[in-house]
Image (cartoon, rainbow over all chains, first blue to last red; front, top):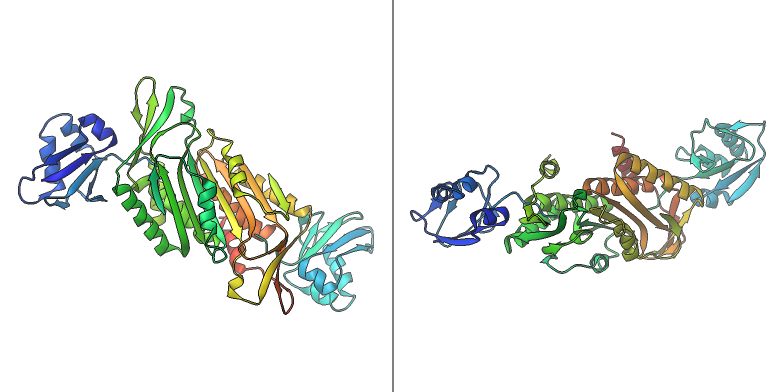
Length: 83
Length: 83
Length: 149
Length: 149
């Protein structure tokens, strides 16, 4: 299991702030997780295909090829707009 | 007559803060004034030959070719070191 | 010192803390970001700032480390507010001290440029017609990439 | 607002004055210069700042005009102290506000670079062995010429 967090516009679009997610195999790439989430249909597919989607693993921004292990924290969010 | 002001290290070297100076003719260039002041001998000649000497006419920095008229205020000073 | 907080902050206190490193330091540069008048869009009534707790602090700490590697700066103080804000409110503070001004100016601007593009904060404009998430600006990305050269 | 004065100044008051332009402005950048520890030269007991009254204010006003032509800044506040100062004392303040941070950062640094090379102030270090006028630094000249490109 990994914890997935959704922030800002994504959380509103998905009506979901956080979920526990079962990895298909022992480990998964972010790309694989995105494919599985997109398979839920809209709004998930739309959000997961957004070119600007950012993802962090254990609070560090990663590429979609990054590998996730059980116990990791995955965060999905749009481009940041602080400051 | 013009008023000549000397600042900082220059004033200390010349032991002079201010003087009234008679222009040789109706108008003079700064270069001409410097020549006349240098003719007083040391420490004047040393100060007036310093490559880093700055000069302002009516409180605006000018080139040594600038022309001075009676009533003008001439300031001689070393490179600035404020801030 | 990095703080993410709802409460307002006092620039005077932050400045005093940076001044405390004198006489070792000769320069203090501060940046404060304020809530503007929403581009004169009168329908906007306020701003809401959300963040990713934990990650925000981590990213900012990394940026401070990066800045310290690049410039001989002594101390950095960063405060970013979250929650509801209204026009003219202070949003963000970055203060840097250093022996010389070049380092303090560069590090302060570097930190703001990367805070804007790397730290997980999101702004939502509150309107009578409903809330709208603010879009990221391409110009902010461009300013951050300047530092790579 | 340009002031040349012996008295110390309050960064908090200057900042409040710059904040007063909110919500039109979104950014405030401040620079403060402090008296350093005289390069660890223990024989130095203090600093004396002399200026050219009248010309100083004229030069600073011109620099503010130049900055306003180059960047969309709203207000500028400059204070430079003269007379006797000791280690850790505030010497100079430059504060700039603007809609966006780029302009505020650039104008504030521009003003400091030219204040350092154009405004008629001179520093004298006071030592037990006698006073010494501070030499101008080539690096300050170089920083000012950057802005011509």
